[in-house]
Image (cartoon, rainbow, N blue to C red; front, side):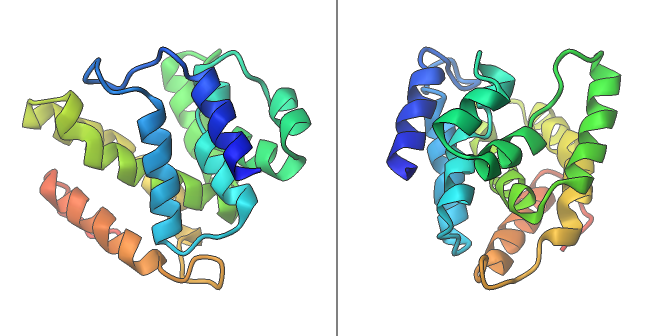
Length: 180
């Protein structure tokens, strides 16, 4: 099923590029899944959600298609890390932070991996450090919303390393607050 999720995500994101306008978008998805594996995640539903986490938001795929192709858990995880792009930006962000706060822990772990992958990729798309710093600052509400569930548990035995990486990236981008 994991290979199916990877292939599905690559197909649906075909032609999309990262901020540098050169790197295929699926490289970000691969980084998210690699980050999940570094945390010790072996649950296929969570790993599949890592591959699929941007499909509803950034492609023509909807919840029903993910549920049909995969399963309800995966569709729920993906939906809970998806912004409602139909809303005005301010409402969208407010609603998204609330949604992340009530998301299942599995979704929060996917979001953590997504944030770390995005932070690590910032220099490739944004040379200006002040823009990078602003992008990081914009993610702080997301981090605060998912923070409560980001603990060591049998399903995420190495999450502490990811949280340390996140703190280092926050500090690098002038976010002095150690969140974890």
